[in-house]
Image 1 (cartoon, rainbow, N blue to C red):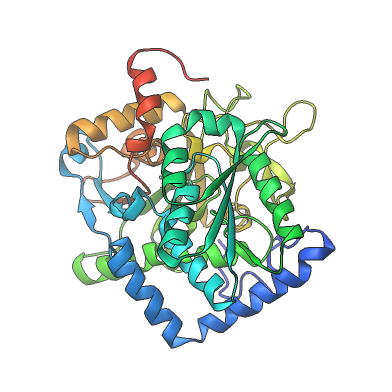
Image 2 (image 1 turned 90 degrees about the vertical axis):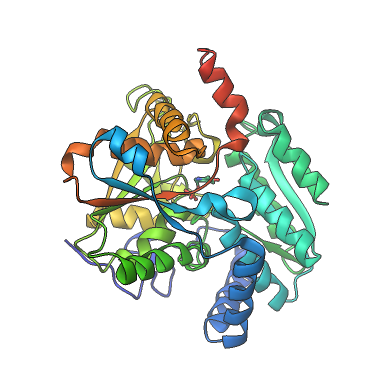
Amino acid sequence: MATHSKALPDKRGRFGTYGGRYVPETIVSALDELTEAFAAIGRDRAFKAELAAHLKSFVGRPTPLYFAERLSQRVGGPEIWFKREDLNHTGAHKINNTVGQILLAQRMGKKRIIAETGAGQHGLATATVCARFGLDCVIYMGAEDIERQRPNVEKIRLLGAEVRPVRSGSQTLKDATSEAMRDWVTNVRSTFYIIGSAVGPHPYPLIVREFQRVIGRETLHETRRDWPALPAAIVACVGGGSNAIGIFYDFLKETEVELIGVEAGGHGVSSGAHAATLAKGKPGVLHGSLSYLVYDRDGQVMLPHSISAGLDYPGVGPEHSYLKDSGRVEYSHVTDREAYRSLELTCRFEGIIPALETAHAIAWVQKNRTRYQAADRIIVCLSGRGDKDMPIILTQRDGTKTS
Ligand SMILES: *Cc1c(COP(=O)(O)O)cnc(C)c1O
């Protein structure tokens, strides 16, 4: 099994053959400028101290590592522990990255922020930091998603950002991302584009990974300090892959720790209604980089499906494609129904309402419990809380199907 080289991505932004930059000529210099600015803050102690202070007082870090004791007993396998990213300000891990990127934007002298959002969580995290730091903010969102995610849209507006509906294509995340890219091409001098997951052209997958690494760094520190041994496994859900790469990265070199990424199996990976990119896809180019992608029967990029809006994306970050091929991370998938059942169980046995995205990771542990001993400890990245999912949760409880 290949271990991960510290040097990845390489100078061209490649993780093996994946990643890179497949972009219009007009933004190449902006990506170069961003690469340089990001390298500079890596050497800048004042920046690191400022980021750490905001993560502590504004975001609420460090987040606890929590033993889900009653859930573990009920599942009847290994000890299940949660890394509580749901306790962050705005309710998920996304804010780790938006705080980092807005500080970078400030350093670069940018006055205007744009972002894409699907479920609205990244839009909310971006509007939040724009309010906090006083920058203009435009959020691109598919018209269909605006209808499905009303509460987040209202929150984004309340925070002073503009929501721009995107009516092209399927009117969802993929189209919102394309539209945000178009805006960036036009306004590249004044504008900083905050990408919400470990996707996009180089250096975005690197930047997002580095800002989300705080999850794994804290986890490794805490387990080394307080546990008799490192965890048997770490499990995280994978949409674009930012919470997963964030918690995995510092454990890549700890080869006795299994790393498991869980994708959205939707109605089942043979149904054509899923978002299991790594399980069912093949390499292709989307949103500026080369990575696994799922296609429909006509060879078009598939309109994916998941019960959780945050996993409903036909691509995946290029580093995950690399880690799949290298074998260091195992990628799997669970269905909508399995995820929903785990969500209910976590509510009843822990008093925690997890996000539907997160419930995929919990469901994987449930399904694979016999792989582990009772004394083994498994850490689930509890990427976010489920309050935002109440409308969908209610349709499940009523027994009606989600489409
Ligand atoms: C957005 C989101 C995800 C999926 O995004 P990744 O980039 O794959 O982490 C997972 N969980 C929650 C709670 C989210 O909001």
